Length: 154
Image (cartoon, rainbow, N blue to C red; front, side, top):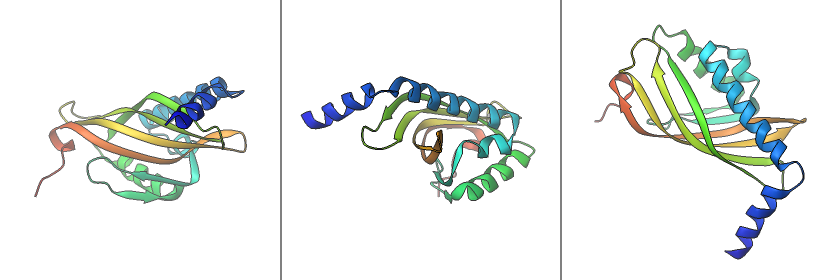
């Protein structure tokens, strides 16, 4: 247990850790802005080629940047689409590889009705590729919802 605490402390203090944390948070903010604008190119700019997303309530899995962008294209084209905001609570940097884990909370609200919404927690794994932090994987868990954003129970 003590060794794990040492690794966490080392990751937080390696040269460039503060800058990496800022860059990841800036990338998350850019991702949020791209979603709000309906900007597929902006969304894709933050995803690694092999990115993967596991959705909140339904646990649907989409693999690769192209697969995820197809999901976003369908969502953005819908007459009633979600505006999702992810808010990082913590970014943990690895002391052994150019990777990081972001944990936080999210909220999605329909652009047509504030009664349709969902929120919860998420984890995102980032990797520094060619000098840029990109999302490799995101997993969401819906913990609250309203209206059409609530899963249908069987």
